[in-house]
Length: 283
Image 1 (spheres, rainbow, N blue to C red):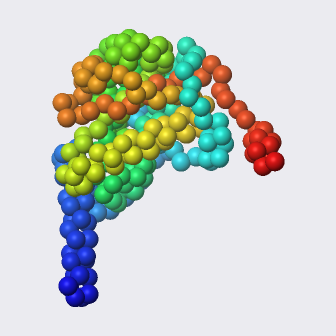
Image 2 (image 1 turned 135 degrees about the horizontal axis):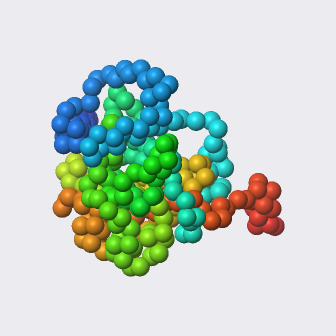
Image 3 (image 1 turned 60 degrees about the horizontal axis):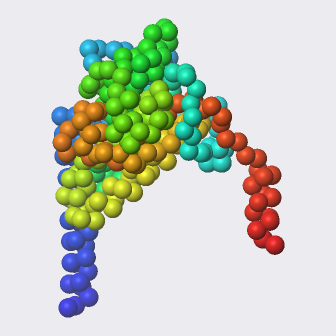
Protein backbone atom coordinates (compact mmCIF):
# COMPACT_ATOMS: atom_id res chain seq x y z
CA UNK A 1 0.00 0.00 0.00
CA UNK A 2 1.43 3.39 -1.00
CA UNK A 3 1.98 6.07 1.62
CA UNK A 4 -0.42 8.41 -0.20
CA UNK A 5 -3.20 5.83 -0.27
CA UNK A 6 -2.71 5.07 3.43
CA UNK A 7 -2.96 8.78 4.22
CA UNK A 8 -6.23 9.02 2.30
CA UNK A 9 -7.66 6.11 4.33
CA UNK A 10 -6.61 7.69 7.64
CA UNK A 11 -8.16 11.03 6.69
CA UNK A 12 -11.37 9.33 5.56
CA UNK A 13 -11.63 7.44 8.85
CA UNK A 14 -11.08 10.65 10.84
CA UNK A 15 -13.80 12.42 8.86
CA UNK A 16 -16.18 9.49 9.40
CA UNK A 17 -15.60 9.52 13.16
CA UNK A 18 -16.14 13.29 13.27
CA UNK A 19 -19.39 12.98 11.32
CA UNK A 20 -20.64 10.22 13.61
CA UNK A 21 -19.85 12.34 16.66
CA UNK A 22 -21.70 15.29 15.15
CA UNK A 23 -24.63 13.03 14.31
CA UNK A 24 -24.75 11.80 17.89
CA UNK A 25 -24.75 15.33 19.30
CA UNK A 26 -27.43 16.61 16.92
CA UNK A 27 -29.65 13.59 17.52
CA UNK A 28 -29.28 14.00 21.28
CA UNK A 29 -30.30 17.65 21.09
CA UNK A 30 -33.28 16.82 18.90
CA UNK A 31 -34.37 14.14 21.36
CA UNK A 32 -33.96 16.39 24.39
CA UNK A 33 -35.24 19.70 23.07
CA UNK A 34 -37.03 19.00 19.82
CA UNK A 35 -34.75 21.46 18.01
CA UNK A 36 -31.09 21.99 17.18
CA UNK A 37 -28.85 24.27 19.20
CA UNK A 38 -28.76 27.74 17.62
CA UNK A 39 -25.51 28.64 15.91
CA UNK A 40 -25.19 31.58 18.25
CA UNK A 41 -26.96 32.57 21.41
CA UNK A 42 -27.24 36.12 22.64
CA UNK A 43 -29.39 36.83 25.65
CA UNK A 44 -29.41 39.86 27.89
CA UNK A 45 -30.54 38.98 31.39
CA UNK A 46 -31.53 41.74 33.79
CA UNK A 47 -30.26 41.77 37.36
CA UNK A 48 -33.67 40.77 38.70
CA UNK A 49 -33.81 37.70 36.47
CA UNK A 50 -30.57 36.26 37.84
CA UNK A 51 -32.09 35.26 41.18
CA UNK A 52 -35.68 34.83 40.00
CA UNK A 53 -37.45 31.49 40.35
CA UNK A 54 -40.35 30.88 38.00
CA UNK A 55 -42.71 27.92 38.38
CA UNK A 56 -45.02 26.98 35.51
CA UNK A 57 -47.15 23.92 36.13
CA UNK A 58 -44.60 21.13 36.76
CA UNK A 59 -41.52 23.04 35.58
CA UNK A 60 -39.27 25.07 37.89
CA UNK A 61 -37.01 27.58 36.14
CA UNK A 62 -34.01 27.85 38.43
CA UNK A 63 -32.05 30.99 39.29
CA UNK A 64 -29.28 31.68 36.82
CA UNK A 65 -26.01 29.87 37.64
CA UNK A 66 -23.26 32.14 38.90
CA UNK A 67 -19.57 32.05 38.04
CA UNK A 68 -18.38 33.61 41.26
CA UNK A 69 -15.13 34.66 42.85
CA UNK A 70 -16.40 34.80 46.44
CA UNK A 71 -16.26 31.04 47.06
CA UNK A 72 -13.40 28.61 47.60
CA UNK A 73 -10.62 28.28 45.06
CA UNK A 74 -10.26 25.05 43.10
CA UNK A 75 -7.30 24.13 45.31
CA UNK A 76 -9.28 24.73 48.50
CA UNK A 77 -12.24 22.70 47.21
CA UNK A 78 -9.90 19.83 46.32
CA UNK A 79 -8.25 19.95 49.74
CA UNK A 80 -11.53 20.14 51.69
CA UNK A 81 -13.44 17.58 49.60
CA UNK A 82 -14.60 14.61 51.64
CA UNK A 83 -17.30 11.95 51.46
CA UNK A 84 -19.73 13.30 54.06
CA UNK A 85 -22.61 11.17 55.27
CA UNK A 86 -23.94 13.21 58.23
CA UNK A 87 -26.08 16.26 57.53
CA UNK A 88 -27.84 18.89 59.58
CA UNK A 89 -31.62 19.03 59.53
CA UNK A 90 -31.57 22.04 57.21
CA UNK A 91 -32.83 22.61 53.67
CA UNK A 92 -30.77 23.67 50.71
CA UNK A 93 -31.54 27.04 49.17
CA UNK A 94 -32.86 27.20 45.64
CA UNK A 95 -29.64 29.01 44.68
CA UNK A 96 -27.54 26.13 46.01
CA UNK A 97 -29.64 23.63 44.05
CA UNK A 98 -29.19 25.75 40.93
CA UNK A 99 -25.41 25.81 41.33
CA UNK A 100 -25.20 22.07 42.01
CA UNK A 101 -27.19 21.07 38.94
CA UNK A 102 -25.30 23.47 36.70
CA UNK A 103 -21.99 22.14 38.03
CA UNK A 104 -23.17 18.57 37.41
CA UNK A 105 -24.17 18.91 33.76
CA UNK A 106 -24.92 22.53 32.91
CA UNK A 107 -24.13 24.42 29.73
CA UNK A 108 -20.77 26.20 29.49
CA UNK A 109 -20.61 26.82 25.74
CA UNK A 110 -23.91 28.31 24.50
CA UNK A 111 -22.82 28.16 20.85
CA UNK A 112 -21.95 24.46 20.76
CA UNK A 113 -23.91 23.14 23.72
CA UNK A 114 -20.86 21.86 25.60
CA UNK A 115 -21.32 21.10 29.30
CA UNK A 116 -19.38 21.24 32.54
CA UNK A 117 -17.79 17.82 32.09
CA UNK A 118 -16.05 16.29 29.06
CA UNK A 119 -18.00 13.85 26.92
CA UNK A 120 -16.70 11.48 24.24
CA UNK A 121 -17.69 12.99 20.92
CA UNK A 122 -20.01 15.38 22.78
CA UNK A 123 -22.58 12.58 22.87
CA UNK A 124 -23.67 13.51 26.43
CA UNK A 125 -25.29 10.25 27.55
CA UNK A 126 -26.12 11.35 31.10
CA UNK A 127 -29.58 12.27 32.38
CA UNK A 128 -29.83 14.07 35.72
CA UNK A 129 -32.65 13.62 38.22
CA UNK A 130 -32.94 15.22 41.64
CA UNK A 131 -35.06 13.75 44.43
CA UNK A 132 -36.17 16.54 46.76
CA UNK A 133 -37.45 15.71 50.22
CA UNK A 134 -40.23 17.39 52.20
CA UNK A 135 -38.99 20.91 52.98
CA UNK A 136 -35.74 19.98 51.29
CA UNK A 137 -35.26 23.14 49.20
CA UNK A 138 -36.32 26.57 50.44
CA UNK A 139 -37.31 29.43 48.14
CA UNK A 140 -36.57 33.08 48.72
CA UNK A 141 -40.05 33.76 50.10
CA UNK A 142 -39.74 31.09 52.79
CA UNK A 143 -41.84 28.48 50.98
CA UNK A 144 -40.45 25.16 49.79
CA UNK A 145 -40.22 23.30 46.52
CA UNK A 146 -42.72 20.49 46.22
CA UNK A 147 -41.22 17.16 47.29
CA UNK A 148 -40.68 14.72 44.46
CA UNK A 149 -38.45 13.53 41.65
CA UNK A 150 -37.43 16.12 39.07
CA UNK A 151 -35.64 15.82 35.73
CA UNK A 152 -33.00 18.44 34.94
CA UNK A 153 -32.96 20.25 31.59
CA UNK A 154 -29.54 21.90 31.16
CA UNK A 155 -30.63 23.97 28.16
CA UNK A 156 -33.30 25.94 30.02
CA UNK A 157 -31.64 25.32 33.41
CA UNK A 158 -34.90 24.02 34.80
CA UNK A 159 -36.29 20.96 36.56
CA UNK A 160 -39.55 19.24 35.73
CA UNK A 161 -41.56 17.33 38.33
CA UNK A 162 -41.79 13.69 37.27
CA UNK A 163 -43.14 12.06 40.45
CA UNK A 164 -44.65 13.85 43.41
CA UNK A 165 -44.01 12.96 47.06
CA UNK A 166 -41.11 12.46 49.45
CA UNK A 167 -39.31 9.50 47.85
CA UNK A 168 -36.20 9.48 50.03
CA UNK A 169 -37.20 6.53 52.24
CA UNK A 170 -37.94 4.39 49.17
CA UNK A 171 -34.70 5.49 47.55
CA UNK A 172 -32.72 4.63 50.69
CA UNK A 173 -34.34 1.19 50.80
CA UNK A 174 -33.36 0.62 47.16
CA UNK A 175 -29.83 1.70 48.16
CA UNK A 176 -29.53 -1.17 50.64
CA UNK A 177 -30.70 0.93 53.58
CA UNK A 178 -28.00 3.61 53.45
CA UNK A 179 -29.48 6.17 55.84
CA UNK A 180 -27.69 9.21 54.38
CA UNK A 181 -29.86 8.80 51.28
CA UNK A 182 -32.94 9.15 53.48
CA UNK A 183 -31.56 11.95 55.67
CA UNK A 184 -30.14 14.27 53.01
CA UNK A 185 -32.56 17.00 51.88
CA UNK A 186 -31.85 16.16 48.23
CA UNK A 187 -30.37 13.30 46.22
CA UNK A 188 -29.01 13.81 42.73
CA UNK A 189 -29.48 10.64 40.68
CA UNK A 190 -27.34 10.34 37.56
CA UNK A 191 -28.60 8.00 34.84
CA UNK A 192 -27.13 7.13 31.45
CA UNK A 193 -28.59 6.42 28.04
CA UNK A 194 -25.76 4.21 26.78
CA UNK A 195 -26.95 4.24 23.16
CA UNK A 196 -26.08 7.91 22.74
CA UNK A 197 -22.41 6.98 23.04
CA UNK A 198 -22.28 3.34 21.92
CA UNK A 199 -23.90 4.08 18.56
CA UNK A 200 -20.83 6.21 17.82
CA UNK A 201 -18.09 4.22 19.56
CA UNK A 202 -19.50 0.71 19.81
CA UNK A 203 -18.65 -1.36 22.90
CA UNK A 204 -15.90 1.11 23.80
CA UNK A 205 -18.66 3.63 24.43
CA UNK A 206 -19.57 1.98 27.74
CA UNK A 207 -16.14 2.87 29.08
CA UNK A 208 -16.59 6.47 27.97
CA UNK A 209 -19.95 6.68 29.74
CA UNK A 210 -18.43 5.47 33.01
CA UNK A 211 -15.64 8.03 32.66
CA UNK A 212 -18.21 10.76 32.13
CA UNK A 213 -20.31 9.91 35.16
CA UNK A 214 -17.11 10.05 37.22
CA UNK A 215 -16.43 13.55 35.91
CA UNK A 216 -19.97 14.63 36.81
CA UNK A 217 -19.69 13.10 40.27
CA UNK A 218 -16.48 14.98 41.02
CA UNK A 219 -18.11 18.19 39.80
CA UNK A 220 -20.81 17.71 42.44
CA UNK A 221 -18.19 17.07 45.12
CA UNK A 222 -16.23 20.23 44.30
CA UNK A 223 -19.25 22.50 43.88
CA UNK A 224 -20.82 21.22 47.09
CA UNK A 225 -17.58 21.84 48.96
CA UNK A 226 -17.21 25.32 47.45
CA UNK A 227 -20.68 26.45 48.59
CA UNK A 228 -20.54 24.94 52.07
CA UNK A 229 -22.34 21.65 51.48
CA UNK A 230 -21.37 18.01 51.88
CA UNK A 231 -21.96 14.97 49.71
CA UNK A 232 -21.08 11.34 49.07
CA UNK A 233 -21.50 9.20 45.97
CA UNK A 234 -23.50 5.99 46.31
CA UNK A 235 -23.12 3.15 43.83
CA UNK A 236 -24.72 0.28 45.76
CA UNK A 237 -28.40 0.04 44.85
CA UNK A 238 -30.94 -1.97 42.89
CA UNK A 239 -31.00 -0.39 39.45
CA UNK A 240 -34.55 -1.29 38.46
CA UNK A 241 -35.94 -0.16 41.81
CA UNK A 242 -34.19 3.22 41.59
CA UNK A 243 -35.40 3.70 38.02
CA UNK A 244 -38.99 3.05 39.08
CA UNK A 245 -38.79 5.26 42.18
CA UNK A 246 -37.53 8.34 40.35
CA UNK A 247 -39.74 7.79 37.30
CA UNK A 248 -36.88 7.40 34.81
CA UNK A 249 -37.41 6.01 31.32
CA UNK A 250 -36.65 2.33 30.55
CA UNK A 251 -33.46 3.22 28.66
CA UNK A 252 -32.17 5.50 31.44
CA UNK A 253 -29.86 3.42 33.62
CA UNK A 254 -29.05 4.72 37.14
CA UNK A 255 -25.31 4.92 37.87
CA UNK A 256 -24.99 7.21 40.89
CA UNK A 257 -27.09 8.39 43.81
CA UNK A 258 -25.53 11.52 45.30
CA UNK A 259 -27.01 12.77 48.60
CA UNK A 260 -26.26 16.43 49.33
CA UNK A 261 -26.84 18.39 52.53
CA UNK A 262 -25.42 20.84 55.03
CA UNK A 263 -22.59 18.90 56.71
CA UNK A 264 -22.56 18.27 60.43
CA UNK A 265 -18.81 18.83 60.41
CA UNK A 266 -17.04 20.17 57.31
CA UNK A 267 -13.51 18.88 56.74
CA UNK A 268 -10.63 21.34 56.80
CA UNK A 269 -6.88 20.91 56.37
CA UNK A 270 -4.09 23.48 56.21
CA UNK A 271 -1.26 23.80 53.73
CA UNK A 272 1.17 23.21 56.58
CA UNK A 273 -0.44 19.88 57.46
CA UNK A 274 -0.19 18.72 53.87
CA UNK A 275 3.40 19.96 53.59
CA UNK A 276 4.45 18.19 56.77
CA UNK A 277 2.96 14.93 55.51
CA UNK A 278 4.73 15.23 52.17
CA UNK A 279 8.01 16.17 53.83
CA UNK A 280 7.80 13.19 56.19
CA UNK A 281 7.59 10.87 53.19
CA UNK A 282 10.70 12.35 51.58
CA UNK A 283 13.04 11.21 54.35
